[in-house]
Each structure stands twice: as structure tokens, then as C-alpha cells.
Image 1 (tube, rainbow, N blue to C red):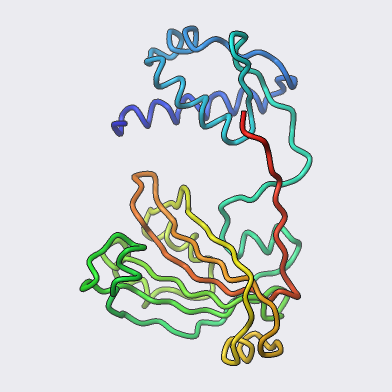
Image 2 (image 1 turned 180 degrees about the vertical axis):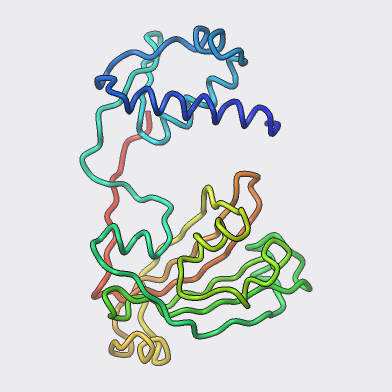
Length: 238
């Protein structure tokens, strides 16, 4: 898909989101793909991509042979792509952080594969202890491509990293590949998080991408198991 096609699809998606948000009742039928293509002077493929995004976001559903309809609001909040700061505020907690490490290191095979870089290239490494209402909650290691963010490790502070990337570098993270697994805290992690050694934790890895599908950040986060939980809403595929 070209940049122009993506832009047209995104504008149409945003328009439909606004129309739905202005009071369309659940199960209301949207205009047909043909009508939308004619009204917005775009191809039906562009319309289909916009509707695919809306369906993925749970805003619409499709009935074969009948059309596309406004979906009823979901009761539970599904997993979303958020920063630690956004996540904690959503839980009613005040986020904070302590900067532990800022350095430039060789990518090596593991980080190079995650960030789609040569193993011989350098990456930025930022390690922070993250807090909620002043209590240690997570240990976060972020790895980024320096070519996208010159000077980042001199500028990073206690603010949301996603906010810094967006406001200072114009780089917005759009989607990510994430893995969550159960683990235990090693003694060093336990000391930083003020928790017993070998107590349960979540180990979360995430590779984040921009709208051009470029790997922007690879992060490894360790969350205290006694202070954090995940809530998932699961849907059957149509």
C-alpha cells in the first residue's frame, strides 16, 4: 500500500470513527463500500482497508451479504498499546521512574534481529525502574535505533518514553508485537523492585513499530507479580 493510499484510508477511518461517535446507535448499518468509495472519491480497496481497521478495533462488525454495522460497546477494556505511564494512570496510579542506565552498546545478533539492524550497529540502551504511587512496580530495559533518535540518551528523563519519541522526534508508535510470560525475580531485580528474591513476576517483551512498519523500540520489562495483573477480553474470530 502506497503512502497516499494509507493516508486516504486513514482519513476515511477517522471520519467513520467520528460519525459513529456522534451517536449512531449500535447495529446501525453503515453505507455500502460502493457508496463510501463514491462519496470520498477513493477505491473500494481503500474503503475495505478502513473498514478492516474499524472491525479490528471493535467499532463495527460485518454480516455477509448484509453489510457493515456499528458494534455495541464492549463492557471490558481489551489490551491496548500503551506506555507504562498511560497504563498506570488508567489504573488510578501516579507513574514515576528512576533512570538507572543510559548507554550505547553493540546490537549483537539478538537485538539486531529485534530492531532489524545489523549486529555490528550500535543501539541505545535505557534502563529505568518504574514506580506507581512511589512504589517500585517494574524494571524496564528499552533498546532503540540511534539513527531515528539522535541525542536521545542525553535527553531522556522521567517522562513517558513514548511521549518523548512523539513530541521531540515526531515518531509515533502504531503497533507492537508483545509476549508475556511468567517468571521469577533474580536477586538484582528483586533488590531494585524491593521485593523478595525469586518471587513471581511477569516478563514482557515488546517490539514496537511505526506506521511504516519500522522497528522503533525493543523493550524487556519485568513486573512485580504481587502488584500487577493483566486483563484480557477475548473474542472468537468471525
